[in-house]
Amino acid sequence: MALNRFWGLFLIHIALFSSLCFAEDPFVTYDFDVSYITASPLGVPQQVIAINNKFPGPTINATTNYNVVVNVRNKLDESLLMHWSGIQQRRSSWQDGLRGTNCPIPPKWNWTYQFQVKDQIGSFFYFPSLHFQRAAGGFGSFIINNREIIPIPFDTPDGDITILIGDWYTRNHTALRKALDDGKALGMPDGVLINGKGPYRYNDTLVPDGIDYETINVHPGRTYRLRVHNVGISTSLNFRIQSHNLLLAETEGSYTVQQNYTSLDIHVGQSYSFLLTTDQNASSDYYIVASARFVNESQWKQVTGVAVLRYSNSKGKAAGPLPDPPQDEFDKTFSMNQARSIRWNVSASGARPNPQGSFRYGSINVTEIYVLRNKPPETIDGKRRATLSGISFVNPATPIRLADQFKLKGEYKLDFPTKPLTGPPKMETSVINGTYRGFMEIILQNNDTKMHTYHMSGYAFFVVGMDYGEWSENSRGTYNKWDGIARSTTQVYPGAWTAILISLDNVGVWNFRTENLDSWYLGQETYVRVVNPEATNKTELPMPDNALFCGSLSKLQKPQDVSSSLATSIVDGRSKLFFTVLMIASILYLISR
Image (cartoon, rainbow, N blue to C red; front, side, top):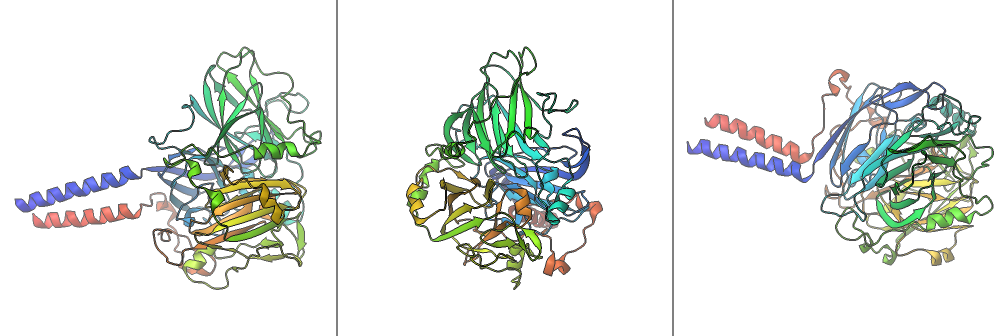
């Protein structure tokens, strides 16, 4: 009898242990069926990539420190990886969904991502990272909410609205990819989509009849949080809402000093949160506009996305001309000064209760410096390629992180130059050797004639300076060493430079790339390898049990039973421990009876 009581109490304690484990770090789970559907966002039927038959895909909604599980089933006719842009994947570059860290998910296979959104808040998005697939869709928003104990630095909004903007071609992504492979430029996009839909017919000449457009419904006298993401291919877009101010509040996981803008340039890959107060008289609906920037606007009029903001008491349809974009054709400093005005709210709490500004980045000594220069595409070995510091990156057959895990030699070179090459450009799998717990300064020098944005996985970096001309040592005198914004994607204006600082505290292999999809596809990227010389699970999690193998390790890959694969899921180490202990305890309990 006493033995039975012992085992009963033991099982109760195990159950309590389980509930505490899951209460500490809750899970959110999503199933993604990635497939082709036919849609006509610009009035022309075309093949797009949908998730669960939706284009764009569903929003992932999590909270700081939650564990996110996404079961991805690849129903495309080509391999697939999903990338979670801006999600830092603390201790787990295994889940980043890029070719340098993961083997692709073959057609008809499924793969389960599991990662923790550790110490993050804010607005992000996901997209397919292989084969130019983002040009066909497959993207969606990713929200990380504050924990309840951490106050947000503004009143709780009355609603949360996601707006995905981006340039768009009516050609399939495979046709766009072939054009790049054949050494051709993509040319002017066919339009701009807002939440996967074409423009409202504000002009009968420019916009054909019958196009489905996006309508954002609001109530008067309220405040909404708008999360706006440029998920496009290569076009910077100016975002504005007729007769309304946009109060900037957050960008890519950092709360900003709150400032009103009548419009803001949002570059490819960037995300912003605005607070929109519906304080107008609703005499009619209002235009929401995303128009092309840094182009010949008279020729690019069709590259304009138009949606509608509709008050519940609206008295009629939107009509008349669109609100004007910035009138800065002859003032190249306007947009840059606007970008410089975006500053970190150093007194606000982010994912942790301490103020964002408690990390005094301006007083940390720099340990390594890289000057990365891009140019217009060049011909290398008879192919049109894009370069970074004279190197056009070639993805290895075996992902870098996997090659390290199995101690493979010759898969890549740890020799990316600190300064641009002076000789002819070359195609290499050349990687930056980052120092764990080092503090890296990167100067991005844009010698191309078009705008570029650059993104780094695994981190939020500090944007400390930008200016026109060539960067020099004296440029450091202009750096913002106090409240430069921390984010994962920054613009570099043509003929200009941007300087960023990065605290290399996240072990793994992290992608550094242009977000301009055509240049990225043509090789303008590299990886930063950050290794803790004292390997420990505290700084990097083990290789996941469901890791895929390819390249030199392809013989290790077991065939997948597609019929049963959807039933599989991943549980974390503590869950496995719990179920193991519970099973043993149950067996012992039965024996004792």
